[in-house]
Length: 454
Image 1: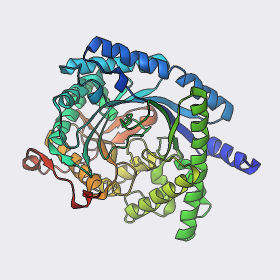
Image 2: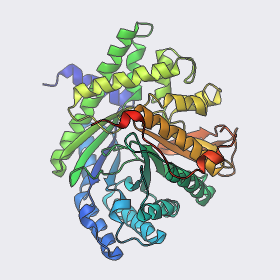
Image 3: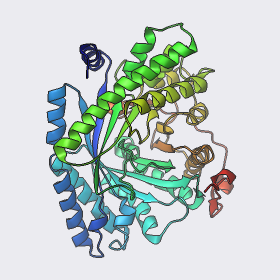
Image 4: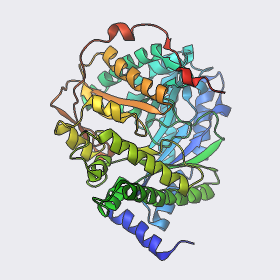
């Protein structure tokens, strides 16, 4: 039974502390759409998406209105297109046509974003995978809703360094193609190690091949709720701090569980997971960095930051798993720069560097996220940054990711404005010492010794 006090608490979290359901995401399998006829494939994809997700927008609006819970985004994830298009696509432009079909289908059903223009290449690339990766720049700059991801490393298979090198080049190509818009299309691409199959958060969402034909995943976010709760225990010991975070995460996850179950019932699609991620926005009071400051740091990046973030991430997960039997995705704390006003403040104050952010990714829920770097950065340097982050994920058996934005024409000291939920970002300094000879080696870094478990 839901008690009156709990209803009041939830209303306060929504009204005063920026609690929201960040996304309802329908995952849709496109495996039954596959054919070697490109026109037929595009028809199959469009028809499948617009049929399964026909009532997505209507359902989200109804739930938001009836429960009084803001639902910020309606999204779709699909089977990695590198698989779906493998028989029909013979050139880069064939994959671009599929991207346009995904974009058109998402627009038709009122979805804000659609993810799954993706390739899974952690051990090697097929010719089809390589075609898809080469098509990403053109696909992202010719669509508005399509998001892309490439999983090029895992604990079980190692790091595909050929794909790492290619992604460094690809990211710069996207930056150049969208240079008239401050290279904004780079934010629609995520590079993963150990990518989860059930992630509802963009730009990294795709519908894993182990998933059912269709599924409902919900992503909930509440940095403001956690910060507000911690204000009431300021100066208390670590046990009190941890208990407060756990209890708050539990309440937030229950909101997601409620929305997910209701969406599942209304759409007649099975419930998948709730992703409890402290995903910030540029709004004042909706910052993960501010939580770290409330824990006791002057700025995110100060000594103790990695320990404080580890504590936060762990307690969020512990509270979440008690609130739902199906917690998944990327659950934990995100540390993007441009989307978090507290992180932006820390960069501008000189408290946080790219190297410190890399250290923090060892214990956060994702990785190097929404970081603007000079547009003059070499492709090999970008590839080196990607390789470092992939190594952290591979060795630590966790999901890590890279979402860098090389902003053409801008350098350290400049800022770039993305707008809306994406905020703005100071251009961060990148280590300019060469890693060319390392990145240009061919092949893959083998899986670590602890991967050999059965």
